[in-house]
Length: 148
Ligand code: CU
Ligand code: ZN
Image (tube, rainbow, N blue to C red):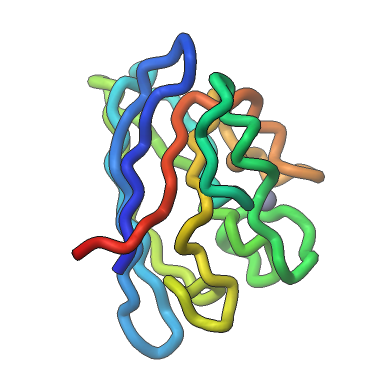
């Protein structure tokens, strides 16, 4: 497994945690809980290239993690950035959960390893458009690490 704690970027409140769990057969279960979102809002969530949240606006995390050179897509499309996890839907309390199983990433294997990369939650919805889903600024950032 791998885990990232998501911290708000400057001027934002979104925080949470995301877990990556290898479930066999080349599949990875991705579960996340994020709080501090606007009620009933929708937010893009992606794995970005760099595990670096040092910039106040998290631009230090780079762009979407895309070692295969695919176009940007939502998770229902097979050929997409390895980091494309789609969207989080917040409830009336501003809390969102994600439970998604993907087949294009590994923790630290040969196929698109995510450990040491970044996770970004954006201010807006990922609409699936090129080049990166038109999701606006970065409201939360975390670095994917190995747990005990
Ligand atoms: Cu992103
Ligand atoms: Zn993407």
